[in-house]
Amino acid sequence: MIADRKDDHVRHAVSQRRQHSGASDFDSVTFVHHALAGIDSQDVSLAVEFAGKSWETPLFVNAMTGGSPRTGEINRLLAIAARETGVPIASGSMSAYFRDPEVAGTYRVLRQENPHGFVMANVNATATVDQVHRAIDLLEADALQIHLNAVQEVVMPEGDRSFGSWPRQIEQIVAHSPVPVIVKEVGFGLSRQTVTWLREAGVAVADVGGRGGTNFARIENDRRSTADFGFLDSWGQSTPNCLLDCAGVAGIDIAASGGIRSPIDMARALALGAKATGVAGAFLEIVVGRDDAALVDTIRTWLGQLRQLLTVLGARSPADLAGCDLLLTDDVATFCGLRGIDVDSYAHRSSWWSESKSSRRSHP
Ligand code: FNR
Image (tube, rainbow, N blue to C red; front, side):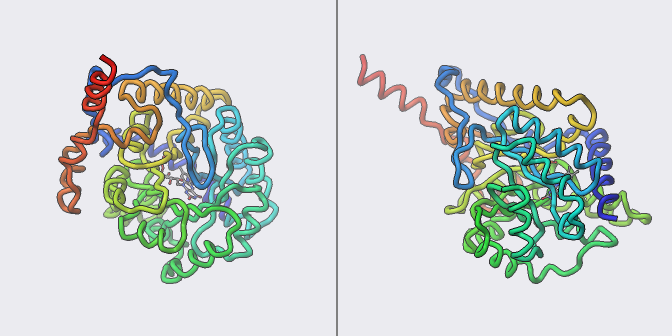
């Protein structure tokens, strides 16, 4: 039954993308253009420090799948793309492997095809310490993702209904994991309060996993015979809003995922404080619909275009984007007003003008 569900998720996620209007809160985040702020492309490095390691790029392939022959093949294609482009990659939830070790190969392929890459195992918040060790061992994982998906579970007829133990179990996993722990939402977002709690629990990275991309309330609702959970279609906070909400929480790395459609969305997420950006649905659609090389080409194009965006914006690194001036409008500005976030300060962050004036003074 789990294998059927995994195949269903892929099918529904891809068809949902094809129906989506394309509107996004990311469109309410705009860079102020400063025509003399640009730098030389060769001076830009896309490298970031993330989850205790150096990554060559601020992009990763986020958790999706495994557990059936078809999803094993998808994992093989995703792993090849990760290997060829050097981007880190996460496994889908490994619950199917805990129930049936015979499906191990559909996950293990992520490491077999990508022996030197950064690979993340993925479990739910009820995984035991023993299961966590088995998941990490199978993938020789560099980090562990724990996914939070209470909204998805309640819409699934066969889903979990007990979430009260999650905080205690996350603490247990953090205490016993041999690799850094990343906690992620699956598309409904992490609030400032949740991220603060995760930091106190010793979690290394919070991936905000906000609304705006793949929508598991809709996917599970479409799988129900009664489809009566449509009222949850717009549940949760969008990814830009989550990043703004969490901006003041120090001591934990923030990752952005949920609805990242393009290099400009990556740049916007990095400018809003994310250290890295994860993409799931947009990359799934490419491996499902086209040949093996298509995703490699797309990732290379995205990274090249991200570099050009940083060049124009005068950012030598992804971290420098956090100093760029941003205009926050529409629903994003409304959210900021209600959550006590100062929209004006984002529009006046850059210092390139005063820096270039002082360098002209010192080198007449
Ligand atoms: C997912 N996602 C996911 N997340 C997770 O932590 N464990 C999982 O098993 C899965 N499974 C899964 C299957 C499929 C088909 C998709 C498309 C996605 C969620 C994923 O990692 C991500 O959080 C959301 O999809 C939002 O990002 P995008 O798709 O909008 O880029």
